[in-house]
Length: 207
Image 1 (spheres, rainbow, N blue to C red):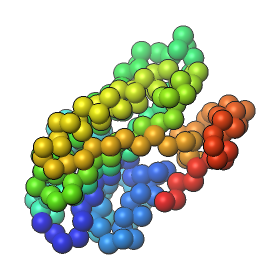
Image 2: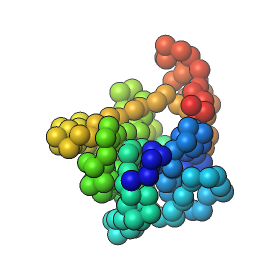
Image 3: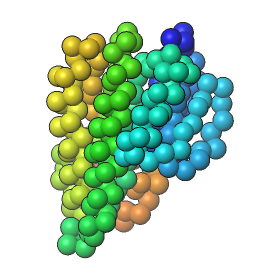
């Protein structure tokens, strides 16, 4: 395996994922990123794949390519996700399927396939990104919050299953971050949410 840490991050075309990629590149890691569309991020040590995270065959191909090109993997960050911010009675089934497939199935597939490489690495890590919408049970985000609640439970169970392999598995649910994901949310709703926080301000994607 390469001497540089190898980190796989999903959803690196923009937002939190892009900033995470830059953060680890600045610290000398090899970063493998992915998104549905091409990314304009070009840097030494960065390798991008275009795929749908719920495409099982495509996920397997990425992990196989990581093993062949870089020799292994040290950490996985499941950041890719989509949101549907609408009243439950107005949410079409197509949206339900898209959110669940991307946020739940996509996270599961990357965890499953990445763990097969991570078990060979020292101090291996899996981090799944969830949301503050789960504990706050935010109106208008029923299917999005439900999908991320599923990710939280998936993380809890996986943590037990992969611990014997030397892999830790954790979930992180950040407060609202100024990215494209929240730009369609009414400002008054964001302001009410921010006001409930211990530190009443939006988070910044830079880490």
